[in-house]
Image (cartoon, rainbow, N blue to C red; front, top):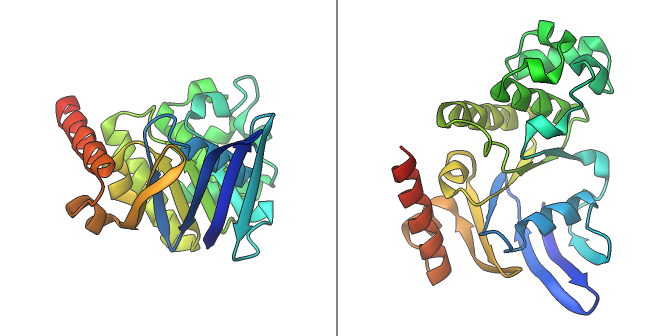
Length: 227
């Protein structure tokens, strides 16, 4: 999938003007305010009021059923007062199949979200994202609220599911360490513009842009400090 042009405007001000290609798995990386979240919302058709978006695809992926979304915080993505099995739009048989795919016991379908751990809830929302057999899975920093061990497990699960079901991934994040674990390619954006993109290994080993170098140094210094 290639986005030939994605532009987001607020009145006459251009906020985002980028293009990128998703081969298998792409990390869209930038600091807060870089435009990565607006890009995600544009692809989902969820731009804030007053903003306009123009997207030029080179495929027919404009079919919204082909795109699914895994949010940042599973605790707020589900209704706490509704049993999990009531929050799906598929049969219980299909629910059980999806729970098996994400490594959850189908007994948890009868539980309420507050009864599950953060890692279990993230698996639930991943299962929900697979309901429509997506061609593209958009990830909005889905491991931010998780501890390091659970984060690694969820990233491996996402990679395994991508390979099994043959969908593409766009991982929106500021965490280059997590992006490296999941994505083959990386696109760095700043102030709504692409400053560098390419193979993950090439960009991390030989960054060409000062902003990219700063992000890499900051990410891995913070990761070392947290450990």
